[in-house]
Image (cartoon, rainbow, N blue to C red):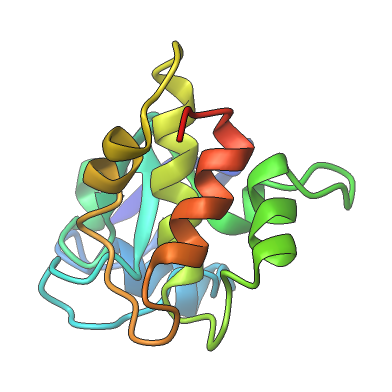
Length: 153
């Protein structure tokens, strides 16, 4: 089956079985290795990408479901080598350690930013609850997202 979609703003076409996981197509066929496989069950958030602007676990999405849609991965956040405020805040706060969970947190926070309006730190914590990290203890990640999104602490 041939599947056409937008990946980080560029048209792509892949030939694959329709039920191949989006995560595998991104990593193995398209070289977008930012999304990581942590659990393979949609529980850890390491494979989070934006599908038409909504955060989804790419390990749960059959590639046939992205036909004609827009997929954004962590590779698509920076523009012309300029990091986003979220990426810069992760560096500033040391929120990225081993890096397995970082793309998922960044993508989920990017969707959170698109909601608009002021945020409370508790809203940031709740929105990021589907992403698991074993290195940072979460506070550095929360601090980075709160600063980057201008949320109230």
